[in-house]
Structure formats: structure tokens, C-alpha cells
Length: 420
Image (tube, one colour):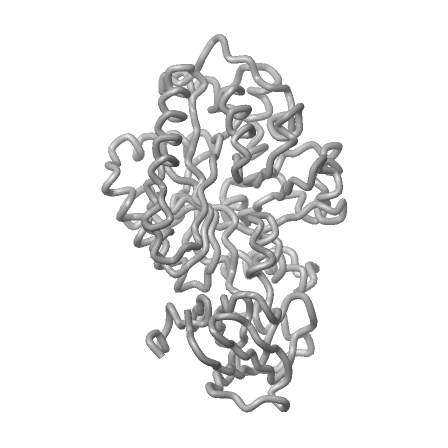
């Protein structure tokens, strides 16, 4: 954490919870934001020039342990979702724990360099924990629970709880990582694992309503997804789904009494959208949808209902998914891609989806996610194009200029000023 006071000036400051400030400043004191306002009212220690200061990005869904599926392949191309799952499982079976840990370190460094200061990572038996807990980043690391067959489910559950039992605060260099649990998906995870996870009162995430074959399996117990599960020895003839709708896995009975971060949610029933509003939670639980625009587009899914969800009052944040399905772990790249697909999204809303909304979903919004006095100085500095625009958000989203620097708790942790 930076000691003392530092004032940064940039062409634009984007606080998120208030309008952009042209020629703005952010003052940092002992790792926290002390002041945000126009440069005319403060003398800057560092003038960042033609750049923007934004809150550090929140990657609300990723798998740091996954690399591209083949050498030189950073696209994850597959004929369809089930074919892609076959490739992922095939590669996972020849990947060692040491390889997973090394990938997590490497890919987390890439995410931080892209401006990420808070990450929600799904891990196999906690393999990414050491990387996240020792890095200059906030994170929730979700141990995966998977298995339709009871034997497989018991193994992954026992492995996850053994990992949870080993976590000690003294093992964290930067004490900003928290553990969670991730029942993988309705098609791969028995209902009792969902109930056990919900009873833990820990942060939870699950892949939900991701592709049409999932809906078919829940409703009819047949189709290409069942054939895939049979082929890899994961199908259970005695499988009894929690319900025929994906939303049953987070909203039915006691499953409602947990925080849920829904990965994807493309095929959620519109009649269920109202249940995802913060006001619909019985005891203040938080439910949000993590939308991964480039992964969604790669598989040719139906249009994602993010606008309808937001209109209904639900929280939609942004994830990158993994390098097995997207070219980079940059939330800014995702936001730019989404803007290109839907330029009608207001720039302020788009930036909030990549920052504050994800922080809210991970219960970190009082600490990070916007530029507000009292919050941690978790920032991203983005170079801006050499042009003017009446809408300053377009300078962020209609550009290919990179993230220049990342700050965490007031310290430069990526970019040319590391160590200053």
C-alpha cells in the first residue's frame, strides 16, 4: 500500500458514480482515494497526459487455469458448444496440477496488466488460490464442485473442503482473496452438491442457462449433451434434476438463501428475470449475471438478454471466461466488443458493467468499483486516441488504445511506472 499522498491528473477521469471529469485529478492517500475532481483545484504530482483514469476492472467470470486449447489457438473455435466441451475435457485430462498453477500465475499477470483489480476465478481444487492470494489483486476463488454420479461428486466435494481447510490468512501476501464454491452446472453437478454449497453461506457461482442443449437435458434427459456425458463416463441414469428450469438451481427452496453469480445466463426464461432483482432476495442475498460477450458470440448463441435483465432491475456484470474461448483476459476488450455490437448502450452503463456491478456482485462495492473518496485506489490508466468526441465514453470504447498502467491500493503494479 502506498504511503503518503499522490495526485494523478489525466485528460479524463471516469468516476462511474458521477459524470466524467475533463482534465481531472485523483488524489491518493495511504492507498485510498482521498479526492476526485477537476485539475484546476489540485496540483498534480504526475500528469498522465492524454489518458483516462477509470476504476480497476472487475472480471466477474474467468478460469485462470485454462490456456488456449491448442498451441497457437487463442480462439477456442469449435463446431458447437458440446464439441468444445469435448476438447476442454480432453485437454484437462492430460493437464497436471503444476501446469494449472503455472497457467494461473501467467494468466493472472496478463489480466492485471489489462487493468483488472478484482477477479472471480473458478478453480480446480484451489489450484489458482496461491496465485490470486499472493498477487496485487482482489479475488474470489471458487472451488469447483462437479459430478452427477455420487462417487465423483463426493470426490470433488471432499477435495474442495480439504482445500478450504488449508487456507490461512498468513498465507496471503495481500489479504484480499476470499474463497467460494462453484457447483459447475446443472448438467454436470448433482442437486445435493448445489444444496451443500448453498448451506455453506459462502460466495457461490455456477454456469447456468449457457446453451440450448442444457435446457433440453433438463427438460427431456436426452440430446447431444447426454451423449457427451455418456461418452466420458459422467452420465448417471438415476440423476434427478432439481427442476426443469435452470433458475430452479438458484431460486428453488433454500437455494434462494445464498449469493449467486450466474455465469452466462443466455437462456434464462424471461419469466424468471424478476427473481434476479436485488429486491427479490429474501434476506439481502446478491444475485448477478456475469455476461462474457466474446465467448457468447463465438458459439453463435441466441442474443443475450442483458438489456432486458437490466431493464427488469437485475445486475449484469462482465467476465472474460477463459483463454480456451476468448483471445484475451481483458475486460476492456470485452466492453469494446460489446459496444461494437450494441452502440446504443450508454457509455456510463457499459463502464459500470465492467467495474461497479461486478464489485457489487462480489460484495466488494464498498471497497472498489468506482472512484469515490474512501475507496481503495484500485485504478486503470488507459491511453486515449488523439481526437475529440462529444461523448467522452466513446474515447474509451471506440479505440484500440491499450491499458497503460494498473494501480492497486495506490501502487503501480503494471505498466511503465511500476516501482514509482
